[in-house]
Length: 347
Image (cartoon, rainbow, N blue to C red; front, side, top):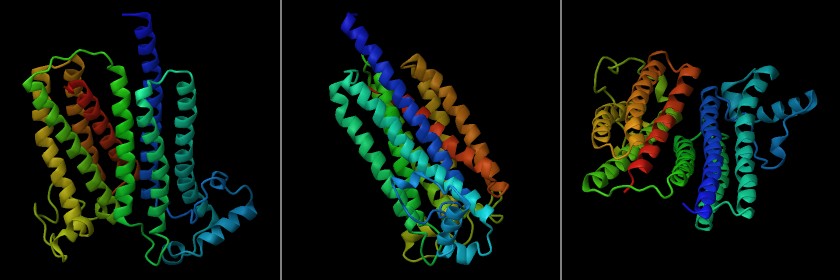
């Protein structure tokens, strides 16, 4: 290995470490977003100030002004009438922390990027990837406000379509950053290209897509509050296939607005993963394309068991915030393992 190659590999590891840190903060951003939703805090800040919004109310007069502004909107008038200032502060800080963390992610990305770029530690071919990450992050902030605006109307509840779009956008940014970071750690790795390996890679990508689909169904469960219905397992109102699943017209609307269908779809996706993941994990260990991919197969199975357990617990105990947040985090960890496996078996 030449000195230049060795130095470039060291730079790649530094850049990858930075990207992992960014991904980790995005992970916590998604967790905090889930907590903000579950505590009904997302509509507590009724305007969007990208620059000045980092400064919270600093004295009692400013708090009263913020609270009075909140009282002008339907959530207070229809759901939280009579709320005290202290109660308002508790929900305000959830949404405020979520927004400030979003801005912090931008700085955690931009400042090290500028350093690494001008220091010549980022490969030039990676510049479009870095620009894409930054632009997507900025657009995610706009999408977040677009989601909040949908709840500042007569019906004080954010659109499940916008909420799920906001969630999936965060998931895709997180996934893309991990994909690039794992790739940096594998520069120069030799991998035998086989038909079995190519087939496994295609299955791995498909399974990753299914995990993302599961997360999206969870977004609709959250957006419609479908998780508060049918708090029994494994049956729904004593039936595997409950009544009222396809009562909306047109038919496709049931997938997005019928809480019975939405929760059923989320459960069915979990059952499908319970079948597919063990089969995939067995194939991954049997082929042993890389030692790390074989190890990841064990982690994938273990995380699936944990995630399903968290999901069932969240359901039957009627959405306790800590468990529900852990369930959302579990989905992201499951996805992270799949992204790592994709990189390991990529032909």
